[in-house]
Amino acid sequence: MHMSISLRHSNDVLFTGSCYLFKSPVTRGMTFAAIASFLAVFAVANVVADYHVPETHLGVDEPAPDKAGDKKNLDVIYAINAGGDAHVDVMGIKYRRDPLHGQVGAGIASDYGKRLLIARVPQEDQILYQTERYHRSTFGYDLPLAGDGNYHLLLKFSEVYFNEPRRKVFDVVLNHEHTVISNLDIFDEVGRGVAHDDVVHFTVRKGGTVLQWDEEESNLDENGKSVRVDFVKGPYDNPKINAIVLLKGDPDAEVPKLPPLEEEELPGVGDQSYKKEEWEKVTGKSKFASGSKISDPYSGDDSSMMLPIFVAIGCFIPVIFCLCKL
Image (cartoon, rainbow, N blue to C red; front, side, top):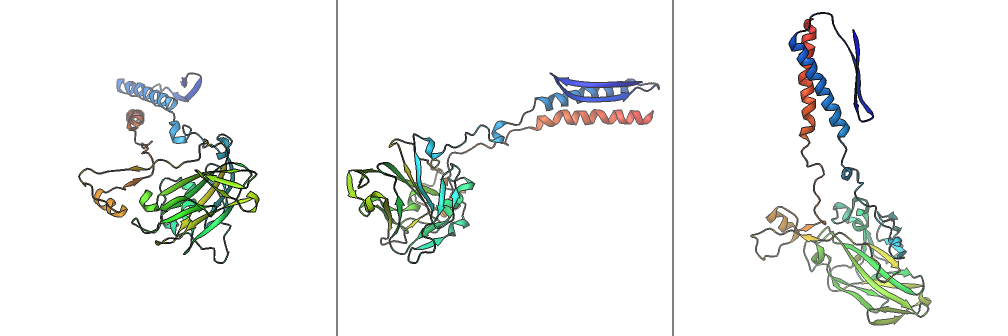
């Protein structure tokens, strides 16, 4: 006799099969094995139907990054990848190839940072902090302006060479007059191989002729068509820059920020100051963490998912054995 079997979960067909009933005598053990096998298959089908891949694995729970221009009318006026090629970051900002590329006396383009994995930065934007331009003396860029208004100058840095502070220290000067960043020591700020951003806010007024930073004012050259940013050589190693973004818009606009930098401390090491590599040797972990810790999405115990499958296999074996004896 032929019999069809169909398993359903709500309105979805989970399993369809058929079997033949034999005229030969069926033992009690065979009957039990067959029933157990049927129930095991049903259990597996229900588990599979109810199982869903967590949305965090698919990235559904993670909101898409906002465009810089979507935040309170904040527009990207100009962006460059110093020492590197054109790039579009995860926020949609389009970086131009270094405009000083190939210019004599404009410093040195370097991709030495490609030896490192830069912390606090997504994989797609590593290149912004791995390439750089440095100079053995003061150097800078002319950034185009877009009339009167509030500007946000985003400067991107990473120390990829030195392993201790007070080796590379320099100033950043805006419009030849305003020392907007004094004695910048990237390693002292975040360590080696870690992204560091600085934001400088300034205003252009009076038809593009006056620049105001903090409480200081200066006159702009070329009728406000551009503003100069210089990286000033001091008594320490060469000044550098990795990338630049010039934004314009609401003075209270939220400028794109890096994840917060958290320091991991190990009890018992006292107040002794360690270099990054020394800290890793002493503690077995990095002193500089790249943002908040994220729990492993695959750390959950899913072994219970396999139990019905093992039961089904175990129940099918005696059925096959009994059928072979027929």
